[in-house]
View 1 (cartoon, rainbow, N blue to C red):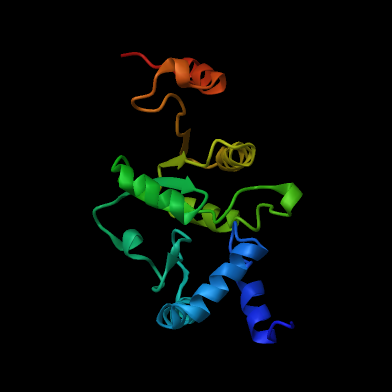
View 2 (view 1 turned 90 degrees about the vertical axis):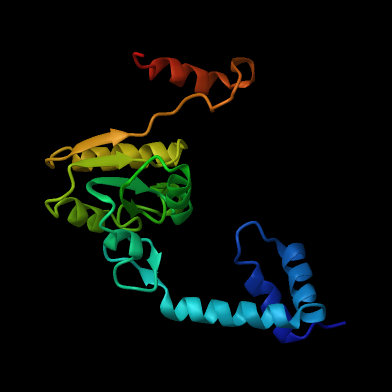
Amino acid sequence: MKTPTSLEDLIESLRCLPGVGPRSAQRMAYHLLQRDHAGAERLAKSLAYALEHIRHCEKCNNFTEEIVCELCRSERRDATLLCVVEMPADLLMMEQAHCYKGMYFVLMGRLSPLDGIGPREIHLDRLLKRVQDGLVREIVLATNFTVEGEATAHYVGELLRSKEVKVTRIARGLPVGGELEHVDSGTLAQAVIERREI
């Protein structure tokens, strides 16, 4: 039996989502068409609206419907601090931790030459422009502790070395409530190296 072309297109479209293979995409498509027409319509409208109205904030590069996002317009934030994160989800985690009150810059990725992602693709030109606004005094590099995240932090650090700003990197170490016997040796070693006086 031949699958209708529009159904094939829907299944193939759903496969663009991360972690969605052919079987998952097929199940999603059948569910939307068979059991949740209202959900399918809402999804289609939301996606169309988002594609038309969501853009990158001119200051922090995060997603917004405005030219400059609400966070960047806030007078309660410390404009002298700029935290560089890889993705919008990282910014949300920082905000949920309630440990940082400065501004942000979202790279929308990390350096990964094997995947064809270089400095242009992660908007480093926009970051440099932001750093040179005269307000920023410290850059906090909060990229992930992966090979790509470390390479990105190193590259950005070197790029900013000649600027008149302090560049720091978030520390890594033991999780709160973690027990030493359950921590991997790399994390434990890094925690010892980055120890501080109390």
